[in-house]
Length: 234
Image (cartoon, helix red, strand yellow):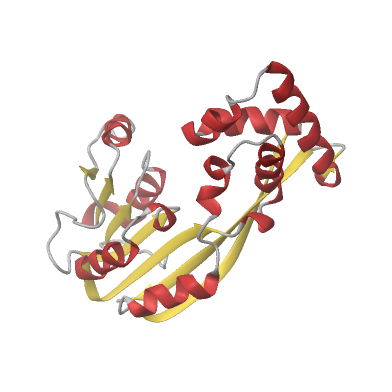
């Protein structure tokens, strides 16, 4: 994580359950510090249960108005946060404020749907059935790397670079992938729940056909998840 070292002060923005914060805590050791903030109070409550030693400073709050002093952190990391911020410029301004003058920023944002074919196939099938697919594709709505890089530069960050990263995961079948997608997020679940039993069965068959080329006979359905990583200095 950005050449993280012992004694670094790190902030995880939009931390969710805090996986990145807990990982960073192992690196910075007792001389460093980790803070993590998320708007969702339930996520912060859950994250605290995974940190029984209280190693991390968990905060429920708004990334566009953070309860930290200027220059509090050496590194800020955020995974899949920026596309969900209504006020992106304000959020980035806050991140820059709480970074030291030489602080570093790393943000990941999903690429556009066409680079994430499994999710795109589900969205296309929903639209075919007359159902708004925004719940599935919204996380992939801010995938232009040029726009992302320009936004960071306009916020005053320097040495901005955007690189694309790809992760492959495998599911037993397209049907299992759809079920996991519904279980993983309320917006996707809401979209899929608008189908009756027969409609859902038909959709699963359509997605299975659309993703046939991504099926490995030994591993199952290959799900490609592509994201842009933006790196910058304050």
